[in-house]
Length: 493
Length: 95
Image (cartoon, rainbow over all chains, first blue to last red; front, side, top):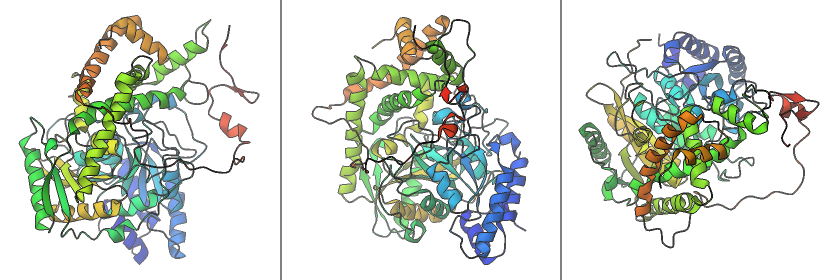
């Protein structure tokens, strides 16, 4: 008998509808898997009672014939989403003890459709990181292991990626500001999609960089991503950047027929010193899409190399503004004060104690680039560069390109602690292929495309036109079928 | 643009984050590394380019100017480290 926790969303949904399994059984299988997976440190707040109750309610709905696609399917929720009455800390000490009095729109959409919440997933603090090494809960360990090193699952959605790869849940929510869904998906052999900016509501998602953040699903297959994304998306009047556009049935649009489609390969993504394996993976991916009937064209995105430095001006600037609210007054940690301490000391001590070093670094860089005398030289210049980055993509799409194929990451998963002593910029380079997509507000997906010589998964990224997630998923589906990636991590935990 | 420890101290103050004096030189060095990386933005010709405000072209939606929320004092105060008599209690703000 197949372990039910190893199913994907589509298979489980079909089994539920056929009556060959129940949400109760699916949920119990996942809870059991989670219990045995403490070593991964993926789930950090466990909600087995809530899950069991939700599963029972879902089973009743399925029996009554009123079951949306996600009904009864057990998933994990990234700690960045405010979940009512359930700890939501954004991986930070500064939100220790915070129990939201409200549910984020995206997690609410999933729960309203009957999905079962197994718990909250580990992540880099305030979504700032690419290795899940900055979390107050400690590191997440990648279920993929090829020697005695503990590897990173990527970040910031490291817990989500690890949980999906290790079959602790059928799928998970993630968020992506500079690559935080797509990079961990690539490091764990899973699928992750970041939709067009505005597709998913940001209401109730702890804010990092408001012009870049987007929620998205992390799943075992492209079909699963299509199913879950549809439920997560939708106009929300509570988010003024939410797009008032109908959400298509992505699964229905996702035919996988890419005959006649134009797929662009941007020459600027061929970086100096890029490992040969990644180059080969990319070339193979292009060949597979060509064999499936697509036309492969070389394209140019001239401002590519400036996306990462521009991101490291804009994201910290927006973060410094968004994180100003963590002052110990209304929620979360408040520092113990000394005799004579006033309000300023309260703010300063609370934030020094509550924020980890990477968060402090980014908040302060952001403060600097926004400060009087530097605002124009840094922040405004970066925003102008951003306009040019977006224009590069607009020009390419206007010339008839349907999607763009790139590597997802410059390497496969590295060892935990290997990047600790190098300067922060080295860690930032992990996002070099993914950051451009957030800067331009486009949809992007990472699909597992092969194993490297060590046996670790590598991903390829497809970037689509604004609002055309269905089309993007279709191209991704074609790639996934051609690749035939079936490898799973060997259970060591 | 080079950052010295006194500038780092000023930035920490603006950000309301307490940084010990002996940690300032290391912080300044980190800032300099990151700013060094950002310097390359100066290579780009941005003449006549508008700074991006909204990544997705959109008009801000409006709604009728009526009260649609509120009266949730208990929920609002629920997570406060120090809530008293319907207020958030904090140390003295003004001299």
